[in-house]
Image 1 (cartoon, rainbow, N blue to C red):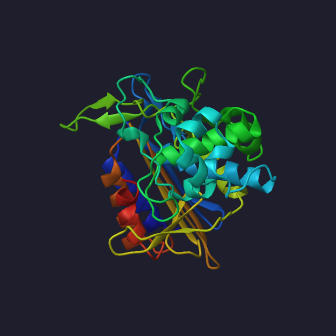
Image 2 (cartoon, helix red, strand yellow; image 1 turned 90 degrees about the vertical axis):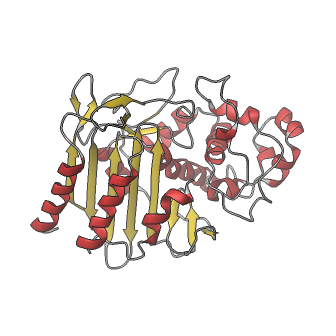
Length: 350
């Protein structure tokens, strides 16, 4: 990356963030070489801890690629099949309560957001200070928005169920499974799956939201939906994500065609949005209270690119959009060519 490109990125970061507020961590890798890395701002305002490449952010929906990998690993070991239905994994009580879900919803449907299963976030949360994965399982009703496998509807519920399926099949907690099968083998040893009862997270970024006057920030680190795991519970740093990127084998199930975007056809595959069925350009965002992220990667014959943008500031899509526009307009080596997916992501994840 040339000096002018680096200056353009630095100028944008300096314009959007400052050293005494919530901040950002950006990593750009081209052909396996780090060409840009920048951290600015505070991980913890009260303690005045600076964001560094080792700061662990809650990944929110970037977690889904790890959950999908866990499922694929179990399938490679012949311990489950993507064609298995929910009835194989959950109790007889669940099967009696939800016979249709047990019989018709497959693991594949959960992976590709085509299950039509209910959005747990729409249920009354007055009885929950925070939803647990088992709370989500217990509130499911035996109905879907559409026949499973026929349409796309982004579903955190689906990835929560995938996490529970991993626990059932592996006979381990999801924390243990991720640690033994992902974090340790991929040398992402500082990464951790959140557990509100037991977890201590080192180098932790807390999440914030900017007040309307834009002069101060409020702590927004947790919400009723921020303790579920398979859909968004991993904490990870730039440094650890880079190790994941270097070691992760590109896997593919059968990319599911998304026809719901207004002007484009996209696909979803194993925790990633794709610009086409060839799977050369992968993109995902992560939005949770106090955190807003984006990652995209390009894997084609001409170039390999990783762009990772993590921030501990909620409702921060406007800054990410500015970053994307800079890439599209000024940095052709990072341009994912079909750029419409960059602008459609908010709608695709509702």
